[in-house]
Amino acid sequence: MDFEFTLSEMLEMENMFKELEEGPLAPQFCEKLASSFSLAPSRAGKQAITPRQVKSWFQDRLKKSRPRVASSNMALKLFADLSDASASFGATESSQKLKGNASDLSELIFEALSSKDNAWYDVASFLNYRVVCSGELEVRVRFAGFRNTDDEWVNVRRAVRERSIPLESSECQRVKVGDLVLCFQEREERAVYCDAHIVEINRKLHDTNGCRCTFVVRYDHDDFEEEVRLDRLCGRPTP
Image 1 (spheres, rainbow, N blue to C red):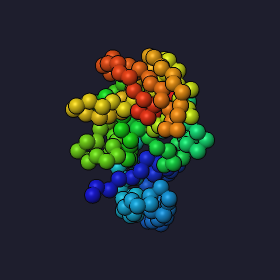
Image 2: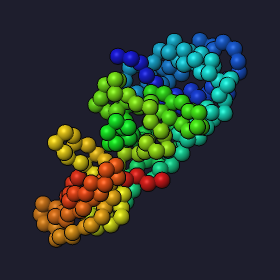
Image 3: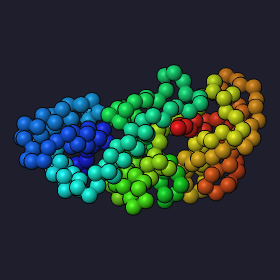
Image 4: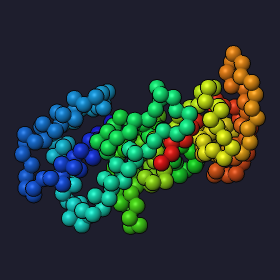
């Protein structure tokens, strides 16, 4: 299995890199940082980090630093902006999204939009980032439950966000016509989560089984409309 740093580890090393003076890295520095990362709760169940891997990261970063200092700062700012996203309507107190600075990103759960099928998938890990010629930031993501052959480069602004929250029966009254939601789309050839807008709501009395209301949604990627129940909807994170 290929080794990979987590997003929060890369951001911490990026911050340290800005403070380092040019010259060889002290062995004690790499050993201490590797030990700190390996023992962190966010690395539970993941491969431990070695001092050599830390050293290699800083050496590679140094090679790229001279022509792209400004781009690197922009990347950190955009990553930090992600952590300011708030939870959408319908989030109960127990399921509220965490908010914080870039260093807290390991505590958040993200989803990313695949360009292959216009569907959103949970992100297992952020592998790397780059600034393209337009000045926009892209990250390479590994989708949860998928192999490395399915990794994709995605635009941070348009295709990465905090994970959507499944709506509960008690929250159906908060869903309004015009709301943007994440809807489970079932078709013969696929079953995926896609962005959609609520275009009509048929309110019904709830019973012991929960919400009986139905919602007509229009999918953003193909304008197809269908009627769904609440258990197929998730509340969208909003900026």
